[in-house]
Amino acid sequence: MSRVVMLVIGTLLGLFVLFNFLLPLLAGLLKVALIVGVVALLVFITVTVVGKSSRSH
Image 1 (cartoon, rainbow, N blue to C red):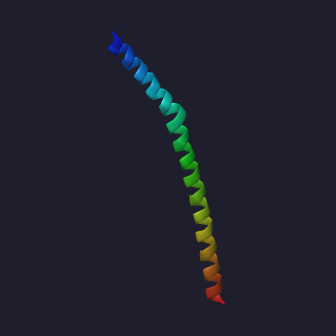
Image 2 (image 1 turned 45 degrees about the horizontal axis):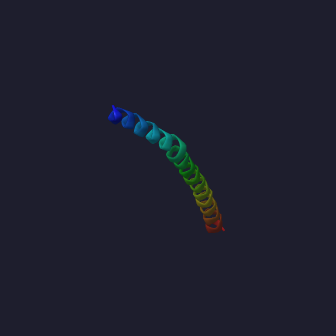
Image 3 (image 1 turned 30 degrees about the vertical axis):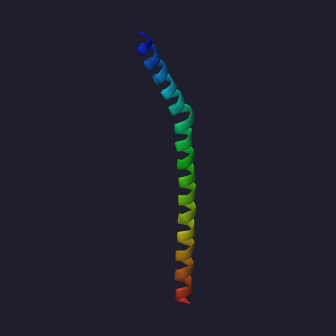
């Protein structure tokens, strides 16, 4: 009986850790990666446009 109780408590604790710590952490990392990707895309576009305009002159 105590084995079943410990299994249930362990499962609930695992779900608590998953939903309160790991998923927000992953969402935060995804946001940071998205922001870095957008900034890198803007830098790439800027360098490409400036490179083409300086070559044509």
